[in-house]
Image (cartoon, rainbow, N blue to C red):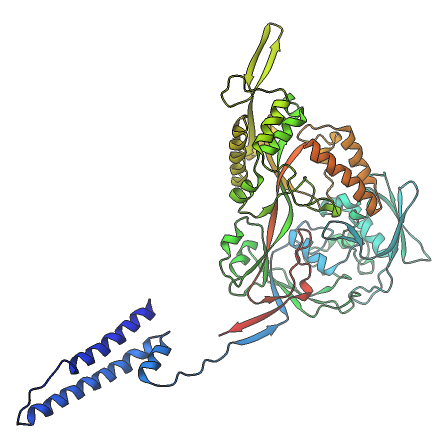
Length: 586
């Protein structure tokens, strides 16, 4: 608006000058006095216009080109923007209780430790275990012991040599203080750790049972034995703890109230020591970082908000979505006879439009998926819905299940008989349990209700507060429920699927139980992949739960950040060694 107003004022000044000279036709007098007066008046007016222009023009920012054209002078050359390169990336973190992996359950500690420490194995993008500090490994014939051959020539960041005693010390420390860290389940089945005295690169793990013996559990940070007197000494270090690892980065500076600085570990055994510096700024809330991206005060952050694409309007702020470990599903109560019919569960799946739920309730911040397992888990399956919305197919399956719209009111009925009842048709009436604390699940339930009504199933919502919702699940006081949760990175879904784990649906399938048990006992990657292929096929047919979607999170980069972003839900800083910043100033 300033530009337009300024242009209008200049134009009006020029029009006034023309109006004073052009329309005026002086009379011819023999006396030259009148003519001299006229000339003087016009000269005064012209001078006044020049003075006004001189006063007004400097105030008109954004009008330089038009002003220069009016005055007939050459436009000044615009200076090209200047750029400044930096090898420092700024990242957000909240204040943590400790950086000690043995006594911390903080999310920031978990992710930062992945940059400082290494584990025996790590999980790739399909969550397949691949060796990190291990060279080779083999199981005993009975599957109750695992021999690990460790890589050699690896140094801790302080120059000490990594060996099997470090692994033994780490595992025994995690077992001793299992209540205080995130890795209790990883080591729960390890009963003994043995080190060959004459071979510092070999270690043997002995398990208590054949379950949970897979190398995918050996993903905890390995800690340096030489830095501590014993496990109790390690555990006693809390706020004053300073990590020593074999990973790509080393701690350079740490003020628990201000910032944490990581630099490349000069002793790192990888292909290249990182050349950049990561500065974690300690904020009162991680959400504060999202407001600092536009101005490059923070270089990178992760947003779990479903509406993130509507928040970041700046085209220079890059948002890259990645698959989370958070699923949303529809569960059934198998104590109800109707849900023990497989075709009814399939009919309900066909009735629901997952794409509508994804767009309307989750701002398209997610993907449809073929099961509750991670999309593409172990390289098997794909992100797709095997029951794409089809109301006609839903009605056909309901009819094949023995239901009929007997009274032609648009809803299916079932035939019931009793000791004194010759038989009557009764309308199927279903309720969907939903937690009122989650608006996205409430909206999801509303869409499912409409879809099921359209398919001929009379359906109502049962919205309860968090406590009442959880109580209803525990007591099987529901027909269906909209559930959701985050999965552990090893995807042990026995608590949801195995009959021996009292799963909330009350689902029991002996074939699935056997497959789940075999899966937890399998060792070779190809064996795990083959068994999971069978699990996936059975789940697709049986549908004990119907996976509505998997949420995606967003990696958000400031305008200045350059490099590769390849985050995963279990490693949000993956590829951070490629990051640098280029700041542009006009």
